Length: 272
Image (tube, rainbow, N blue to C red):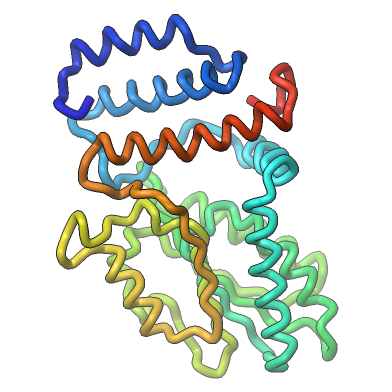
């Protein structure tokens, strides 16, 4: 793969396919999905470095089921979301804020926020207004913001049911192209910036001198939020070398597949 030897790579992938399975043990499952990913790389004209992945057609309902199962067997996402929501809620209550503006770099489906919205409801003095600026990479195709706009509609419907004032702003573009004025910052509002484990794929100084990651971090500095919630994955996923990217991804997902093998039956259909 690293030297673009497609013939040898395809031959090796055929051998991997003979010993891998989405229904097997942790190593067989890991090999199956990595083989799928490597085939996707081979089908492109170059090794992708910083491009949005094509949608695989997974519905929001299926994603929600998978996410629910993931947070049941794995504490990392659950605890980080809990910590972030508790911190934001305490700050909003302490400052007696009337409007909370959350700028979420990497909102995806916004599954973290209903729990915070519930907490906002019980703050003394009535629920404060919530503004969320949802930021994501654009989707391929004619509707690059479709997914995060739908996220906004779901959050809006949820807030209407529990009588919480809500406003949503969707931004779907490469993050280093976002301007401060796009975020509609109001200095009279309580402003929170959240970026949980999503800068790992944004190129850093090992790729370019004026790197996108520094541009994004400088934008957050200019926002000057009351709170910045930042999660970091310890891995060089944006390295300029394919082999480095591959090994980092392999180490990360090996730990996850080990965990699933220890906590879930292999025959459990939801595990797929």
